[in-house]
Image (cartoon, rainbow, N blue to C red; front, side):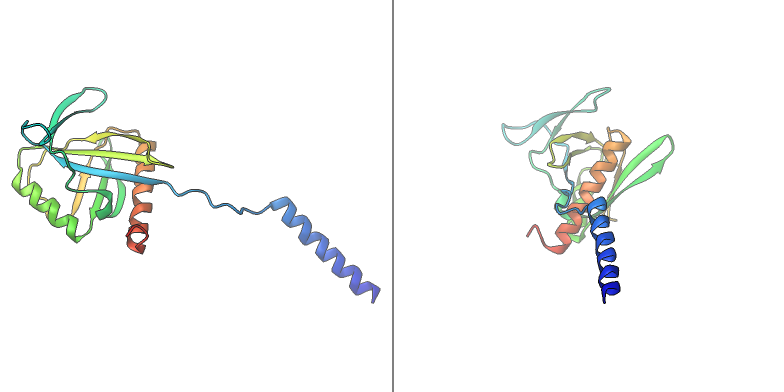
Length: 175
């Protein structure tokens, strides 16, 4: 009898030591989130019908855009980094509703720019205008690719946040 009790105490002591040494995580780390807004270039008009922004940090460009975005992170299915000659780009895939909006706006505004604004971080506080790609053709695929005015680390953080938001939207947590 004493042998069984001793063996149990040794096993219990080893298990307790393992738990104490390894510890346990009781608080889950906050998921990073991100926001992405896409605006279309517009003509300067009456007060409230347009706004002026400055893009690109290295060589600033002034652009007049519509006051409201026509695409947001709510319509994103997935985002990823793609390799391009000389760098990288961000590719964003939108849902059906946003694909229709992207197709309509790009078909109606050839020769204008899209203005892309992003926010990222634990609480999306780091944000700025990322790109202003020229609309050269109708985009009917629902995939928007652009080269961001951001470092690779910032782009990876933005993509991680956008994918987290997309997963939450698909689960219906933001409804």
